[in-house]
Length: 65
Image (cartoon, rainbow, N blue to C red; front, side, top):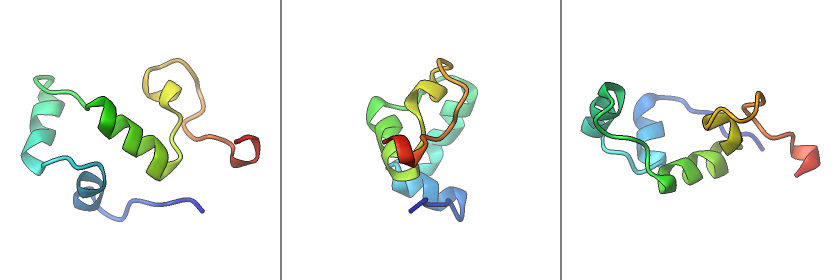
């Protein structure tokens, strides 16, 4: 089952990101942690290689995993 994000606040809570930290990430002074990236990939079926620019597919094909 594919999980969808209904709001930014829900997404921030899901990956344990404090709201004030997102501004720092947008400004480039902070970055997503490996734990947050792992949570994003697991909860939303996102391909980590896409995040790092290594693959074109954002999502995994569930039939292959």
